[in-house]
Image (cartoon, rainbow, N blue to C red):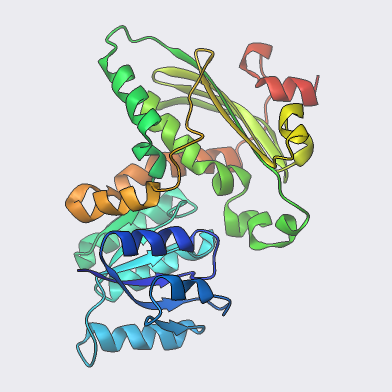
Length: 318
């Protein structure tokens, strides 16, 4: 049995990590969050020590790791806001624990390079959660593409709309310096999936980018990708609005829908199972999507041929 510490216990994604730690037969020893609305932990690890101050938490970890008391921590699970990931990964490694960090692992490519040096220095490992790589529909498509020796270039449309209220823009998520911007905060797992399926980035063009939506075009080794991301509920298709749905997700590959509406619930547990058995996704796996979204965040918006524009962009900006 492995012992875990979890940072960001009150956050949106933390329950998936609690569930994964529990379902893989391991233990949560300690947790940290500046908010104290963390009663969910009682459903999983009611005996876990809890801290609202990072200084007291790290002092507690130091004592455990130096065998003053308690059983040593093997892993830090990091579910904190994006801009804190780098610091919290460093905290894990410097306290003789491996790090399991949510996406985005870090905000900038050079942050990943610096962490690579810290891995060498400490001898500890950094892992990230790339759960879509474990989704059965993605695995099946990956196998199909790899088996096709024709070098076909696929046509892909990625559309992800997840409605958010005004609060989003006033939270850390609406601050590009803290979240990395919209493509990073809500899109990075899709960009990782596209890289995983279709290979290296040849060109990365941004057509539109603002605080509520962005769109562009990726030329990958084996795909032409038109992508559109939005948190504006007005962009939802009529059929979603009529059903009262606040999100819409579609990945069309050669006009065929990649169906992964189902199968998301247990992907964090699968990720932990694979990681704990020696098949985790490390820094090298995380770097390509970090580079993609960093480019999207910083590139100039360019005009483009109609064929390269996502259909939703043509509706919004005819």
